[in-house]
Amino acid sequence: MSGRGRRIREAIRSRVLRARYEAIFAVQSGIAAGLAWFLANDVFPHTRPFFAPVAAVIVLSAGVGLRWVRALELASGVALGVVLGDAIVLVIGVGPVQIAVVVTLAIIAIAVFGGGGVAVPQAAASAALVATLAPPTTGFFFERLFDAILGGAIALTIMVLLPFNPLTRTRRAAGQVLSVLAEALTSGARSLERADPETAEAALTTLREHEPDLGALRDAVTTGRETATVAPLRWGSRAALSQYANAAARIDRATRSVRVIESRIASLIRDGEPSPHALGESLGALAKGVMSLRHDLADGRDPAKARAITLDAVRAGRVANAQGLGTAGLEIVSQVDSAATNLLCAAGLDGDEATIQVRRASASGQG
Image 1 (cartoon, rainbow, N blue to C red):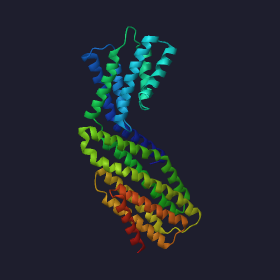
Image 2 (image 1 turned 30 degrees about the vertical axis):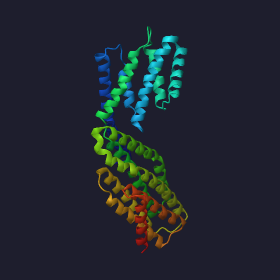
Image 3 (image 1 turned 120 degrees about the vertical axis):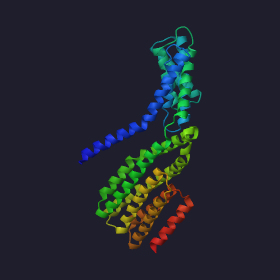
Image 4 (image 1 turned 90 degrees about the vertical axis):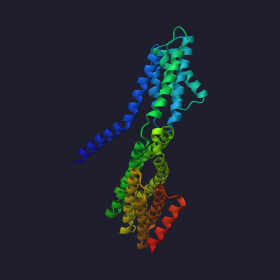
């Protein structure tokens, strides 16, 4: 298959996966909006209760980071914007100046009441909707405040009763990070084998380009653990998410070490330093350990195999050291040890035990 065909296939696959992962949000939003309208329009027969479904969808959109805190902030922002919009427009009327005043005061008010950054634009948008689409003419519309609160409450209820699978996004995010990390290590080994510094530099560039993936992993873990805490259907995911939470910080640190490794590989080759075969073997073993960790975490297995392969990388590094290394080579071996320690922690060991295991592997490699 040509390079262009491969890229097209990967793009299609990425879009299909994205649609699959967002399907639960689409279902949640549809159910929440429909239920909010039904309750506000039929059970509580309000006039044009559009704020009920709008508030429900807005609150459900808080899908990243501290989801429940953000959801409550969004609900508060919508409700406050409705209140201010009704009150201010009723007093000063509607017009470009009045709309400017409504939006300005909504933002100031939500800041005074301690609302977070996500609540500010929702308060402003809700106030603007009141002022432009349905300004009050005869009195204060308590119904709209009720509709906004109703929509937010329904959204929070849907998040508890119909939660997304917290492991799905977390596995996807972790898999992306670990795959890029393993590929960078493989490229580093290839760079040494071919004495090609550009390959290592390209791997370093790729690692930097994918740095946002590490943030996405942290967000996925945080959101997933919150969901698994409040949603009974997802309580069974808590142990696996705790494992990912522990792994995420360590994977981040290991990635930093690998970035240094790629930089030093390029220096080693350009400076003509010794490059024994065992140095490339060390990087190759570390890449295999990373991929083994990815599969073990995704399958919920004890990453014992990943730990064993990672320690093989440490031993190979010591063999390379015994065969003779320059300044850059010695730093590569040092960073392999650092990355291995963090990967062992990501694979379930505590920091002290990981350090001991790396030291023992290093001693046996020298032996």
